[in-house]
Length: 436
Ligand code: ATP
Ligand code: MG
Image (tube, rainbow, N blue to C red; front, side, top):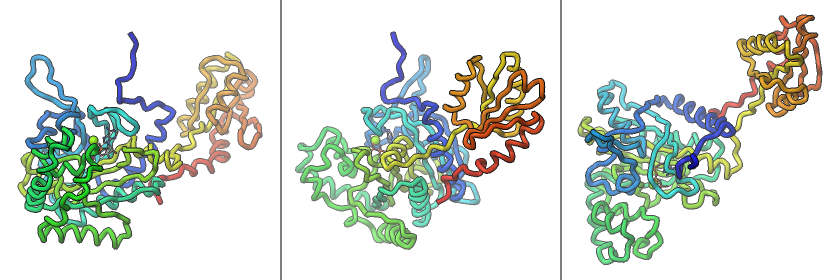
């Protein structure tokens, strides 16, 4: 019997957690600038939060981790995405009554989908997402797209493309659905099993199929744009015009329908063009949802728009472009214990260093001088603070400034002042990924 991590999941080990933290910090910073506030919802919900009638998406139909505890007839599901839970909470907490609509929210955390694991596709992965709830205005659509684009640009991604489409309103969609049904009727038998189901449940989803994607019949399928109502056309034109005025590059892609069934009007993706992304090139995806707030019992005509990005996929894209988010993580000081009797005094000095904001550590393994000095090196400490019997007697510390290759002895009560003067420069070098 061995203990191994479940397939499709991963540990984020300390060696890469600073990269995650840097990324999270940038995301939070941008939400702060754009006035989006964090919401944290449970990682499981009642199954019907995700499983809505007539939903034909793979995610809802075959990827959900659904469970029921013994002696209970409540069916729960690990969240496969963030939007449904956020909208459930928005309605349950009557946030729709907020005088300052839209309510602009962001979330971050793990999502679970039982899919076939591959590069950029996990069973437990992390998403960061935003939702702008209670507004139906093309500027709100543009706002979230600009937010997404600005974040990815600020992180340094260059090789990206914004893909945009509209699914129109209910009227446009049902006209289009009808046209797709007629068009695909002679081809259904040649399509994959999933597409046969999609044909019945929601023919729009045929366009999103990864298996049938290259078939001849897909290429000549009717286009949504020919079935849009005048109002839907106008809405989309405004989104496009404003994006142009802001010089956000985008491409309209007729076949973009997105993986979830609740979308209406604007849908979009940001894809990485880097070859290393393979089939998992979509880093971020989202769209407008007219029906979701009413589904959860909120006001009938209230709409929302949002997107989610996969953090693991984003990290792959960043790496593929050679972008390193790692902060310089060196210690300010490493306290070296030269004599066993000096340990307690050294520990007091260490505690003092920390109290004054110096990132520091010391040996607890009672290692030799040489062994401790190797740690100084490995931990990229800026200073080594040597403490032995001699230093205790003289009430001093011996400080090695590693980059200057200098060594000085200072009275212990001047240690902090000394570091303030000699390390202060470095303090301000922490670069801020939030600024372009
Ligand atoms: P795909 O077409 O790649 O399956 P999706 O349509 O299921 O994506 P969404 O539900 O829109 O994806 O999720 C938004 C983002 O979350 C994706 O663009 C991707 O970056 C990330 N994502 C989705 N599923 C996974 C997964 N299984 N593993 C890692 N990241 C994922
Ligand atoms: Mg998917």
